[in-house]
Amino acid sequence: MARRLVWEQDGSGWPHAASSRFVQAAGLRWHVQQLGPDGAPVLLLLHGTGASTHSWRGLMSALADRFHIVAPDLPGHAFTDMPASPRQLGLPGMAGAVAALMATLGRAPALVVGHSAGAAIGARLCLDGALAPHALVSLNGALLPLSGLAGQVFSPLARLLTVNTLVPRLFSWRAADPAVLKRLLDGTGSALDAAGAALYGRLVANPGHVAGALGMMAQWDLQALQRDLPRLATPLHLVVGARDRTVPPREQRRVRGLVPGATWTELPGLGHLAHEEQPAELARLLAEMARGAGLLGAMAPGAFP
Image 1 (cartoon, rainbow, N blue to C red):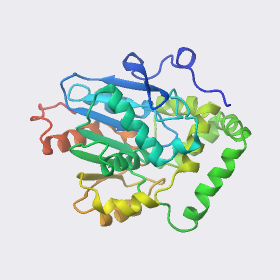
Image 2 (image 1 turned 30 degrees about the vertical axis):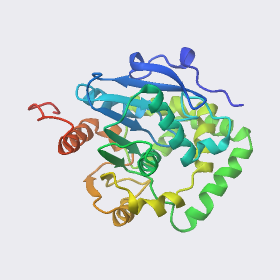
Image 3 (image 1 turned 180 degrees about the horizontal axis):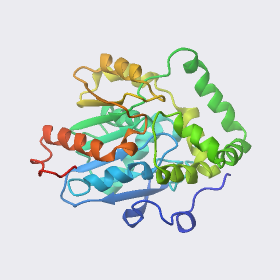
Image 4 (image 1 turned 120 degrees about the vertical axis):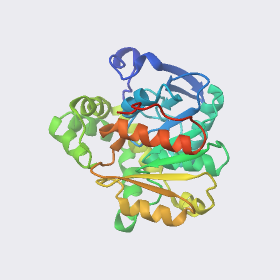
């Protein structure tokens, strides 16, 4: 088994480390960050494939005075255990595990924000009645199967790669090269600062984390979600980075056509990692959505400069 990140050894300097805790749920030991007032509306943040709680660092800082924030590392990612069965890395398995985690924590999210594949998990939770938030925010959400040839090749290729246990080690070895990491991040259409890039560098240099991300990609199947999206009753807000190269805006237009009443907010100049590029802008937007849903009172002048 590929070496995984160990908090006691690798957690030094991790964003919001003081808010980290470890929780047993769904047969896994989860790394979860919780911050904000206990009585505030609960905001659940679900990161995308290959990321971790670190991707929400700026957004959590900006919103912790208004929400009680819950941000887990997804199964197989960063400091959360790898599931025993590969199927648990698929969408139904991930959604069920997150539901079990929230039940263990005793928190009912008022607002769910999912980035990329995290948006698919949020949608599945809402469709299945496992969570009942006031709204679901899809941030550059990967909600539909890849179209064209990519859709026919991607998952089978990922499954093939996971068969060879050397692949995560080889990937991590290559990703340790700063030039390779830069190309990976540039491919998202986002421009991260040096600190943000370094955090991704720490993740992709760990074979255990890479194995979790590859396993998730290998098990990911969005056909059922595409079929079910038209009956999504939870209000859906599509937040779209205009420069997203990972899930281009045209894919979000397909989603908007499937989900009655879905709203659309485009973020000029931002890519797939928009929430890391401009966390203050995303915080302002989420606060507006929360106020529209009756979750927050009036925003104090200058609260989000």
